[in-house]
Amino acid sequence: MAKHKIAVIVGSNRKESINRKLAQALIALGRDTFDGEIVKIDDFPIYNQDDEQNLTDSVKRFKAAIAAADGVLFVTPEHSRSIPAVLKNAIDWGARPWGQNSWTGKVAAVTGTSGGAISTALAQQHLRQILGAQGVTLAGGEAYLLFKPELLDAKGEIADESTRKFLGGFLDSFVTLIDRLKK
Image 1 (spheres, rainbow, N blue to C red):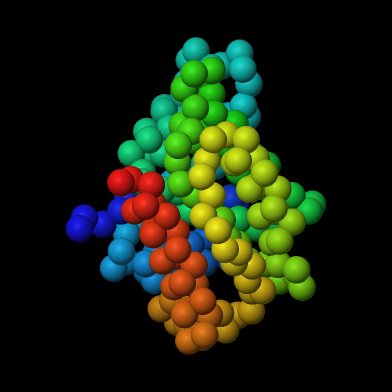
Image 2: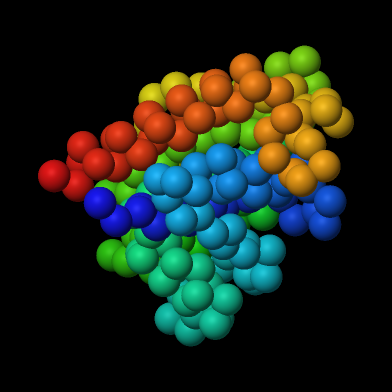
């Protein structure tokens, strides 16, 4: 069976984003079952309906990457108890112009990490609500990770065996849902 193509969206535009590092580790962890690629979202203009008829090249590239993907993996931090503005902007551009919603029918999984005690639980909940309204089928399972420096090893991979097993199951559930819905 061919590997699935997964668009990975990191909800952070920080150079040293811990969520980008987690996304890269998840891509490495799932490499036997999917080809994951981080899709850039930090080069779009702020969404404005007036600009829908003249999409920038960055928005066109983004929409094409989502259209070509079998699934979308969101890896996001939490900002002010919600999703980051850069991520909301990407979701808005993906949903527009009217009749050209890139999200409809996509399968997605949501995770994230932060140094806080509840990790990214509220951002993930909010993101799931937004994506559901866009016609996305969400994979079950929750993956809230408290970030600690020892989460990743020197190669940038998940260091702890129990965490690697947990995240492997999370990714397997995501890919299984994609398989089920493609039949």
